[in-house]
Image (cartoon, rainbow, N blue to C red; front, side):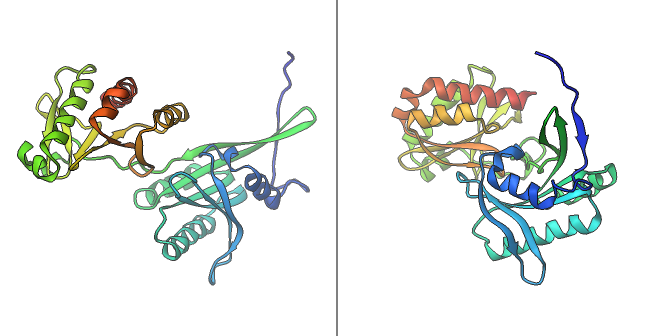
Length: 289
């Protein structure tokens, strides 16, 4: 196998590979962005008194929508504002969906990285830098995420004082004695990763304590007949497939909080103990890092 040196290409200066070409490239296969297996909802989507949105993509699992703007060359203030404006319009028109703004440009300078990072504190915002390269007689475009959406943390040590404490009896009323006992079973599985963990009963969920402080990586909410559990873990295709094969009842993956959401009975835990153990162990490890 021989080495061929890639040759960078400026799309803005190229007579053939223009912005329309990039839009169509993404429209034909949104997965090339590296954000997920999205579907195309619309292209050149007309906005009331605000021009046209380049691409509207959607996650088929969570139904989340991504308002995508493409710019050749270096990004500028007007394009950032336009991206956010389109995101805001779509969010107001279709509030039943979660929305995220996506800006794609050939060159995203450090100045604009700082500006977009400020927006990202309150607006779900992703920035991708695209690089076109020629390799031999072929050409490809690589997309690199340079600004990621801010992941909002769930309640942990910093916020624990704001979470109203309660006790086991409270959750036995909200759920049942039997479903709270499922929390004990889940804790027993988690304790294989850390024997010092104990249950932390709050008004909104049952979490975990470690060394006298909140150490949350799973969030248990007993119901009358089953127990819901949110497990904080980055989404993974292999894990998705394992959960699907287990035929567990689930809620859609929560993109905003980054959690797998399972609905478990005692039988579900017994039949899928290896899967649940892996989920909790990976989540614990990520939290401990």
